[in-house]
Image (cartoon, rainbow, N blue to C red; front, top):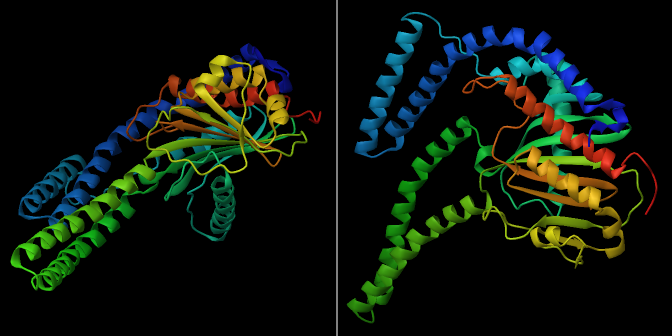
Length: 400
């Protein structure tokens, strides 16, 4: 597709506008930004090393305590050498928002009426708190929607990062960058969890020892050999139980970044149609049960070999999953370099979930240099989603 029909611009025109944005707005900011970023990057790494050292000292065995002490000394030396003794260390942590708050609103005007916000935004003052409350309510609604989708992986931990929403030719669009599993846990939460675990583990060993003693006493009435056998079995179960829970936790909450795309469809359909990959590219993914859905076989044999299609209405599914949709569907996966892509038509909306291994909509990062390539990737990501609106003619209420 060479243009976004609903914008009335060719892709070449959009690229020209994008270049003007980059060279006039973004590029002049980057040199100063990079100097500041490099200055603070080592400080941030040192702080993380300091926290890790404290964790090792507080919760570790002798060897870990020694390593923790080395980490603390090393971190303090780096901080002093970098900032000087007796000076206040001011570290800007959120370099991404430092750029995004300035550049993202203008960047999105290239594509029409869109706004961006950080879902985890926390501010001070009445106006900021009101904004945070509004965002929190929106997040709860988004969570409710995602939990109801059949294509959503089963997860325990969930958080939103970047949110882009607006309309493209009267079609409502939401782009939701989500974190599932361990990536939804920040450093502070991990530190608190480690502290709690440090206190829980000794009690577990104490209680476990009592359980083994009780089991040995009960079975000693038969013989010492029987008591020993059952004591060993109990010890193994006490070891395997937490190990199994931890393993299961890592499996079902496999660290993933996902992009969720919600598109309004000005079409009347009553069914529920799902498209998801065959052979699970990510073995950590766990699907929910899909009751009342029948398998749909499309004419595209290559697509059938890669994806499962299930629906409550086979005729409706074939109207929705056209050749044009399939082509754009696969193009979006390529544009986002996604591990997998899934789709679900439900309640007059189209939902897409893409599994990715990178920070989407990136524009600035304390640990990574921001270049022209950063903005080009952002342009292609958003362009690929909007082109799907044209392909599916989501702005036309043609009925099914």
